Length: 237
Image (cartoon, rainbow, N blue to C red; front, side, top):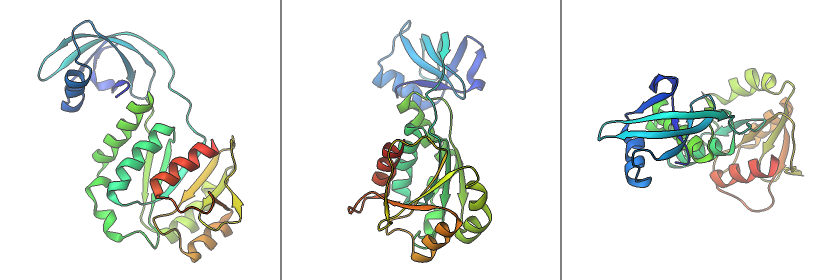
Protein backbone atom coordinates (compact mmCIF):
# COMPACT_ATOMS: atom_id res chain seq x y z
CA UNK A 1 0.00 0.00 0.00
CA UNK A 2 1.91 3.03 -1.28
CA UNK A 3 -0.91 5.44 -0.48
CA UNK A 4 -3.74 5.42 2.05
CA UNK A 5 -6.95 6.03 0.13
CA UNK A 6 -10.06 7.26 1.88
CA UNK A 7 -13.55 7.75 0.39
CA UNK A 8 -15.40 11.01 1.01
CA UNK A 9 -17.74 9.33 3.50
CA UNK A 10 -14.81 8.63 5.86
CA UNK A 11 -14.08 12.34 6.23
CA UNK A 12 -15.75 13.84 9.29
CA UNK A 13 -14.48 17.30 8.29
CA UNK A 14 -12.54 18.48 5.22
CA UNK A 15 -9.34 18.04 7.24
CA UNK A 16 -9.98 14.81 9.15
CA UNK A 17 -10.91 11.22 8.34
CA UNK A 18 -11.29 7.93 10.16
CA UNK A 19 -10.19 4.47 9.00
CA UNK A 20 -12.27 1.61 10.38
CA UNK A 21 -11.80 -1.35 8.03
CA UNK A 22 -9.57 -4.19 9.18
CA UNK A 23 -7.31 -4.34 6.10
CA UNK A 24 -6.03 -0.77 6.25
CA UNK A 25 -5.79 -0.81 10.05
CA UNK A 26 -3.72 -3.99 9.88
CA UNK A 27 -1.45 -2.39 7.29
CA UNK A 28 -0.93 0.67 9.47
CA UNK A 29 -0.05 -1.48 12.49
CA UNK A 30 1.88 -4.37 10.96
CA UNK A 31 3.54 -2.91 7.86
CA UNK A 32 3.93 0.79 8.58
CA UNK A 33 4.27 0.19 12.35
CA UNK A 34 2.51 3.52 12.62
CA UNK A 35 2.79 5.82 15.61
CA UNK A 36 0.92 9.07 16.39
CA UNK A 37 2.35 12.05 14.50
CA UNK A 38 3.70 9.86 11.68
CA UNK A 39 3.08 11.35 8.24
CA UNK A 40 1.62 9.29 5.37
CA UNK A 41 0.82 9.68 1.71
CA UNK A 42 -2.96 9.79 1.33
CA UNK A 43 -5.49 10.28 -1.40
CA UNK A 44 -9.15 11.20 -1.52
CA UNK A 45 -10.85 8.53 -3.58
CA UNK A 46 -11.81 10.22 -6.82
CA UNK A 47 -9.83 13.33 -5.86
CA UNK A 48 -6.31 14.54 -5.14
CA UNK A 49 -3.28 13.13 -3.37
CA UNK A 50 -1.40 14.63 -0.45
CA UNK A 51 -0.19 14.09 3.09
CA UNK A 52 -1.89 13.35 6.40
CA UNK A 53 -0.74 12.95 10.00
CA UNK A 54 -1.82 10.06 12.19
CA UNK A 55 -3.41 11.35 15.39
CA UNK A 56 -4.52 8.09 16.99
CA UNK A 57 -4.55 4.37 16.24
CA UNK A 58 -6.72 1.91 18.19
CA UNK A 59 -7.86 -1.64 17.53
CA UNK A 60 -11.02 -0.50 15.72
CA UNK A 61 -10.13 2.84 14.13
CA UNK A 62 -7.43 5.31 13.16
CA UNK A 63 -7.84 9.07 13.04
CA UNK A 64 -5.79 11.14 10.59
CA UNK A 65 -5.70 14.86 9.88
CA UNK A 66 -5.07 16.03 6.35
CA UNK A 67 -2.12 18.38 5.90
CA UNK A 68 -2.67 18.94 2.17
CA UNK A 69 -4.38 17.41 -0.85
CA UNK A 70 -2.61 19.29 -3.61
CA UNK A 71 -1.38 16.73 -6.13
CA UNK A 72 -3.52 15.44 -9.01
CA UNK A 73 -3.60 11.68 -9.66
CA UNK A 74 -1.42 10.34 -12.48
CA UNK A 75 -2.91 10.59 -15.98
CA UNK A 76 -5.04 7.71 -17.22
CA UNK A 77 -4.08 5.63 -20.23
CA UNK A 78 -6.14 6.49 -23.33
CA UNK A 79 -7.52 2.97 -23.61
CA UNK A 80 -10.71 0.99 -23.10
CA UNK A 81 -9.66 -2.59 -22.42
CA UNK A 82 -11.95 -5.42 -23.52
CA UNK A 83 -10.71 -8.58 -21.86
CA UNK A 84 -12.14 -12.07 -22.28
CA UNK A 85 -13.03 -13.15 -18.75
CA UNK A 86 -9.94 -14.90 -17.27
CA UNK A 87 -9.92 -17.74 -14.80
CA UNK A 88 -11.00 -16.45 -11.37
CA UNK A 89 -7.50 -16.71 -9.87
CA UNK A 90 -6.04 -14.83 -12.81
CA UNK A 91 -8.86 -12.25 -12.83
CA UNK A 92 -7.91 -10.92 -9.40
CA UNK A 93 -4.27 -10.34 -10.34
CA UNK A 94 -5.18 -8.97 -13.76
CA UNK A 95 -7.56 -6.36 -12.35
CA UNK A 96 -4.89 -5.15 -9.94
CA UNK A 97 -2.21 -4.92 -12.65
CA UNK A 98 -4.56 -3.24 -15.14
CA UNK A 99 -5.63 -0.67 -12.56
CA UNK A 100 -2.05 0.05 -11.48
CA UNK A 101 -1.10 0.71 -15.10
CA UNK A 102 -3.79 3.38 -15.45
CA UNK A 103 -6.67 1.77 -17.37
CA UNK A 104 -9.99 3.41 -16.47
CA UNK A 105 -12.44 1.49 -18.66
CA UNK A 106 -12.58 -2.31 -18.51
CA UNK A 107 -15.07 -4.65 -20.15
CA UNK A 108 -15.01 -8.32 -19.16
CA UNK A 109 -16.37 -10.34 -22.07
CA UNK A 110 -17.61 -13.87 -22.66
CA UNK A 111 -16.07 -15.69 -25.63
CA UNK A 112 -16.26 -19.27 -26.86
CA UNK A 113 -13.19 -20.41 -24.92
CA UNK A 114 -14.27 -18.80 -21.64
CA UNK A 115 -15.68 -21.45 -19.30
CA UNK A 116 -19.27 -20.60 -18.40
CA UNK A 117 -18.53 -21.51 -14.79
CA UNK A 118 -16.20 -18.51 -14.54
CA UNK A 119 -19.25 -16.23 -14.50
CA UNK A 120 -20.38 -17.87 -11.25
CA UNK A 121 -17.14 -17.05 -9.44
CA UNK A 122 -17.35 -14.96 -6.26
CA UNK A 123 -14.47 -12.93 -7.74
CA UNK A 124 -17.10 -11.20 -9.90
CA UNK A 125 -18.98 -9.94 -6.86
CA UNK A 126 -19.00 -6.14 -7.02
CA UNK A 127 -17.35 -5.82 -3.60
CA UNK A 128 -14.57 -8.23 -4.60
CA UNK A 129 -13.92 -6.34 -7.83
CA UNK A 130 -13.89 -3.07 -5.90
CA UNK A 131 -11.25 -4.41 -3.51
CA UNK A 132 -8.97 -5.51 -6.35
CA UNK A 133 -9.31 -2.12 -8.00
CA UNK A 134 -8.41 -0.41 -4.72
CA UNK A 135 -5.29 -2.56 -4.39
CA UNK A 136 -4.24 -1.48 -7.87
CA UNK A 137 -4.79 2.18 -7.04
CA UNK A 138 -2.84 1.87 -3.80
CA UNK A 139 0.07 0.30 -5.63
CA UNK A 140 0.23 3.07 -8.25
CA UNK A 141 -0.63 6.03 -5.96
CA UNK A 142 -3.77 6.77 -7.96
CA UNK A 143 -7.23 7.79 -6.76
CA UNK A 144 -9.57 7.27 -9.73
CA UNK A 145 -11.38 3.95 -9.87
CA UNK A 146 -11.82 2.23 -13.23
CA UNK A 147 -15.29 1.45 -14.51
CA UNK A 148 -15.82 -2.29 -14.97
CA UNK A 149 -18.66 -3.70 -17.09
CA UNK A 150 -19.59 -7.35 -17.62
CA UNK A 151 -20.76 -8.65 -21.00
CA UNK A 152 -21.91 -12.29 -21.05
CA UNK A 153 -22.88 -12.39 -24.72
CA UNK A 154 -20.24 -12.10 -27.43
CA UNK A 155 -22.60 -11.67 -30.40
CA UNK A 156 -24.66 -8.84 -28.81
CA UNK A 157 -21.43 -7.13 -27.82
CA UNK A 158 -19.73 -7.35 -31.20
CA UNK A 159 -22.85 -6.47 -33.18
CA UNK A 160 -24.54 -3.89 -30.96
CA UNK A 161 -21.78 -2.29 -28.85
CA UNK A 162 -18.49 -2.67 -30.64
CA UNK A 163 -19.26 -0.30 -33.56
CA UNK A 164 -20.10 2.49 -31.11
CA UNK A 165 -17.02 1.83 -29.00
CA UNK A 166 -14.90 2.19 -32.12
CA UNK A 167 -16.25 5.65 -32.91
CA UNK A 168 -13.24 8.00 -32.80
CA UNK A 169 -11.07 5.19 -31.41
CA UNK A 170 -8.36 2.99 -32.84
CA UNK A 171 -9.42 -0.65 -32.48
CA UNK A 172 -6.62 -3.15 -31.81
CA UNK A 173 -7.24 -6.88 -31.61
CA UNK A 174 -4.35 -8.69 -29.90
CA UNK A 175 -4.23 -12.29 -31.12
CA UNK A 176 -1.45 -14.72 -32.11
CA UNK A 177 -0.88 -14.96 -35.85
CA UNK A 178 -2.19 -11.52 -36.70
CA UNK A 179 -0.35 -9.83 -39.59
CA UNK A 180 1.03 -6.73 -37.82
CA UNK A 181 3.30 -6.34 -34.81
CA UNK A 182 2.02 -4.40 -31.82
CA UNK A 183 2.80 -0.69 -32.33
CA UNK A 184 4.80 1.26 -29.77
CA UNK A 185 4.19 4.52 -27.94
CA UNK A 186 0.85 5.49 -29.43
CA UNK A 187 -1.25 8.38 -28.11
CA UNK A 188 -4.56 7.68 -29.84
CA UNK A 189 -7.70 6.86 -27.90
CA UNK A 190 -7.73 3.08 -28.25
CA UNK A 191 -9.99 0.07 -27.83
CA UNK A 192 -7.80 -2.94 -27.03
CA UNK A 193 -9.30 -6.44 -27.21
CA UNK A 194 -7.51 -9.41 -25.63
CA UNK A 195 -8.74 -13.00 -25.73
CA UNK A 196 -8.79 -15.82 -23.18
CA UNK A 197 -6.33 -18.65 -22.64
CA UNK A 198 -6.34 -20.38 -26.03
CA UNK A 199 -7.26 -17.16 -27.82
CA UNK A 200 -10.33 -16.12 -29.77
CA UNK A 201 -11.87 -18.59 -32.22
CA UNK A 202 -11.65 -17.76 -35.92
CA UNK A 203 -15.27 -16.60 -36.18
CA UNK A 204 -14.76 -14.15 -33.31
CA UNK A 205 -11.64 -12.74 -34.95
CA UNK A 206 -13.49 -12.31 -38.23
CA UNK A 207 -16.37 -10.47 -36.55
CA UNK A 208 -14.08 -8.05 -34.72
CA UNK A 209 -11.95 -7.36 -37.78
CA UNK A 210 -15.11 -6.78 -39.85
CA UNK A 211 -16.25 -4.24 -37.22
CA UNK A 212 -13.06 -2.22 -37.74
CA UNK A 213 -10.42 -3.71 -35.43
CA UNK A 214 -6.86 -4.20 -36.62
CA UNK A 215 -5.16 -7.46 -35.69
CA UNK A 216 -1.81 -7.21 -33.90
CA UNK A 217 0.60 -9.68 -32.28
CA UNK A 218 3.42 -9.69 -29.71
CA UNK A 219 5.64 -12.11 -31.57
CA UNK A 220 5.86 -15.87 -31.72
CA UNK A 221 5.70 -16.52 -27.97
CA UNK A 222 2.35 -17.54 -26.48
CA UNK A 223 1.83 -15.66 -23.20
CA UNK A 224 -0.51 -16.05 -20.28
CA UNK A 225 -3.31 -13.52 -20.28
CA UNK A 226 -1.99 -11.54 -17.31
CA UNK A 227 1.46 -11.35 -18.94
CA UNK A 228 0.04 -10.37 -22.33
CA UNK A 229 -2.10 -7.60 -20.83
CA UNK A 230 0.86 -6.02 -19.05
CA UNK A 231 3.15 -6.39 -22.09
CA UNK A 232 0.60 -4.88 -24.48
CA UNK A 233 -0.22 -1.89 -22.29
CA UNK A 234 3.45 -1.17 -21.58
CA UNK A 235 4.36 -1.39 -25.26
CA UNK A 236 1.38 0.57 -26.60
CA UNK A 237 1.45 3.47 -24.15
